[in-house]
Length: 120
Image (cartoon, rainbow, N blue to C red; front, side):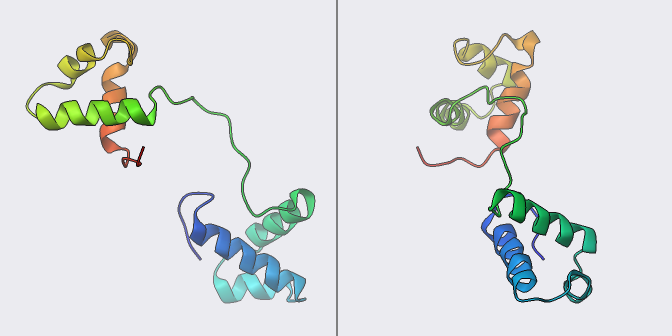
């Protein structure tokens, strides 16, 4: 079974397989034993599928993004052109995009650097 992001293609495929085997009449215990997925997980996905009719997970609450993909690209561009400049200096270069340095914006720069860049 796939592990990783909740709505990745591999995970959705595995959930679909769970539902397909369940709809074909295979007992959840047998499926759980042959695939290595816990019986509880199999039962949970069957229940969610019955209630919601979807294999995708619902969006969860959490901290909203601080930067947009466009701003991420601008930050990465600045870092590529000045790789030896400190993160704090880069933070001060983007006062409109990022919060003041004492507000965790240095961490925001690290998050942008570590996040895979999506095409804009």
